[in-house]
Image 1: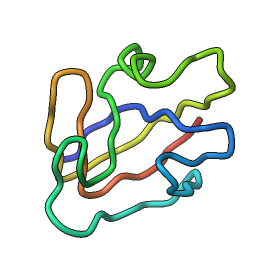
Image 2: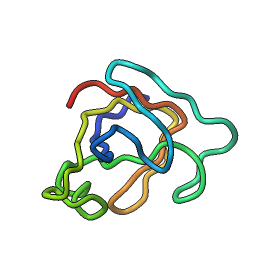
Image 3: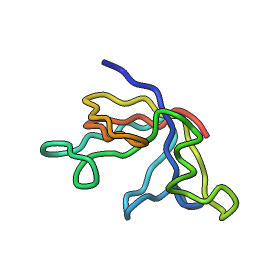
Image 4: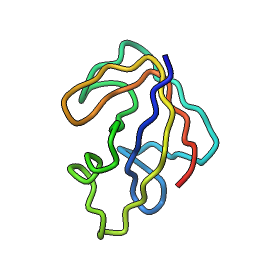
Length: 85
């Protein structure tokens, strides 16, 4: 099932050492688990600001995710596609 959401990144489009590009799809290896493995994102844009300062030079992207496990304010996916900034 495809889930739409939002992902915060540093100004250079990295998150936890991973480099991202708009339009690309990424696949996690292994079992996805919140705060451990997979691609983290939020279903609501407002929730991204719990993890990334909106005034600190960070960037925010619309994403599509599959193989999702939901938490309270964040979710983690096995596959994520960066749609647009």
